[in-house]
Length: 463
Image (cartoon, rainbow, N blue to C red; front, side):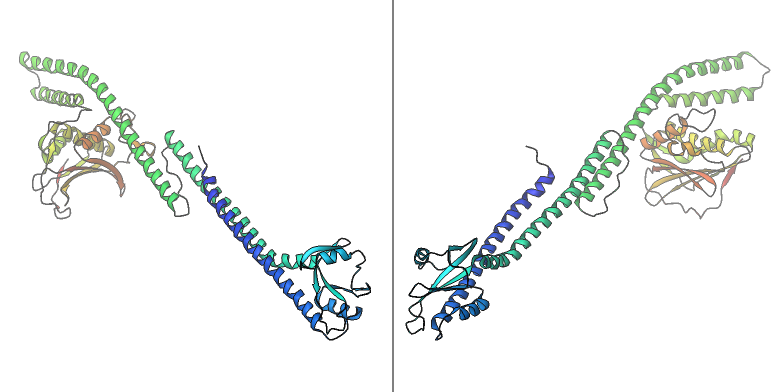
């Protein structure tokens, strides 16, 4: 059986209110009994005063006693003559006789008014000892006294109960609203919106729960991005592999044709043919790397990052000379090795430095720095003087098919990011002092002495 939280909060309150009302009723009843006892003592005091008095009882005396006590009096002489402070014509002798043994009992009514009756036994020495005296206390005065005694308790209990109900309803309403907000937020997360929710202002368990929901949403968002990126890279590997296979066949045919031409024809330019063959060999190597795109690259061996960077810069030097780009490479004094796939790491370095060269443009500058931090991490930083990526793609720069170049296809940095992650590293970029900086971080193969970034000023510039 489903029981709302609101009613779960109200049920204990209902039990508490029942106990409160029972306590108030018991206290009110005790107060009423105390008020009745006080009235009875008051009537006894009046009776004692009249019984022990040594003065004759007449209408004037009885009227004065009525003014002092609030009670009415009925005096019946032996000759049945009546002296009363009220109209006692409707009071029968029989009723008076029957009530003689029952003091403070509501047995006499005069018109519409009720009276509590008590007979006073006069002493034989009293001037009116041969008469019968009755004290009639108005029932309305007794009820008024009882109500004045009970009213504060009842009002306090009623006010406390109403205040408790209102307060509990308000707290329950706010509590249920906050719970429903969390429930709605989880539905939004289930629908695929992982944006964080606004935390409640009150610091309590529900705020902690909201924090947990936001943490869960962040982790789900990261998981979704990881799955999406993995799927894109898998599809990219399939497309790139098929395309590379077709291109490699054409490049291999071109290589064979150039080699046959060099063997059978004389009088040509051997240097130009050698450059063409080298470029075709490089294209073949790049196409081979596309075959490995998307795989985990488990076959790894120690690689020198310095040699990989040297090889990459050697391939880019002709392009830099032609465009008058200042390409600076600051080597280290000791080898910096990493455990990985040299081909993939070369692809990573070539894509990042090549992009920097293209971004710098004619007359620009590119600076490459390699160092090892104290936590045995390799840091490769490539900065260029270009304008940086367009703002519309800045947040998605490492996603496949995202590019700011009119002729680009957006695979270079996506492949670089994948290679860095596969080797336990990462790649990021930012703008520093008007220059674009791509930072690659990889785990070093073994601990090495960290390089002082400011100690060496001897940079080898390749232009």
